[in-house]
Length: 126
Image 1: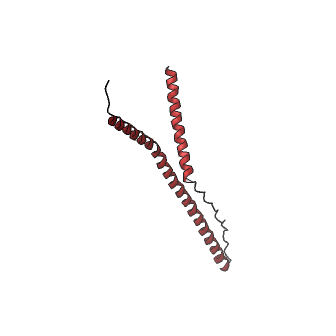
Image 2: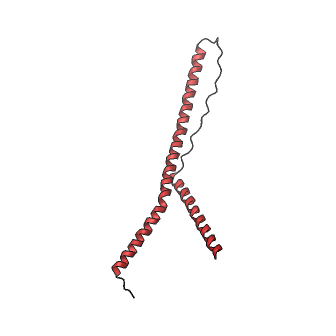
Image 3: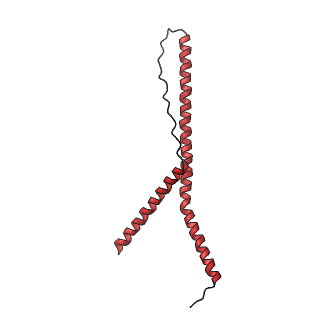
């Protein structure tokens, strides 16, 4: 029987542990990148809603100023009454940790579905 030195066994074990660690890290990187993108999208959506609200307030102020100027000027011309713009409240920005958790759950479900499909194939081939 071939005798393997203890140092070589330790080296191989460390290499396997490092390889396993790299595989585990690679499985979590897409979720982190996705959650970062989700957080940026949520932040941008929030900014869009805030800008819409600001535009709505400015349009409302312009409307009021036009009404004051129109009422102080001669009233010989009839003016159309414009409705005040509708205020759209901004959506709450979701918690990034919740987004990350949701992403991880989706990835886990996909992995379980893949394993289930492989198990079904193995059972059918036996």
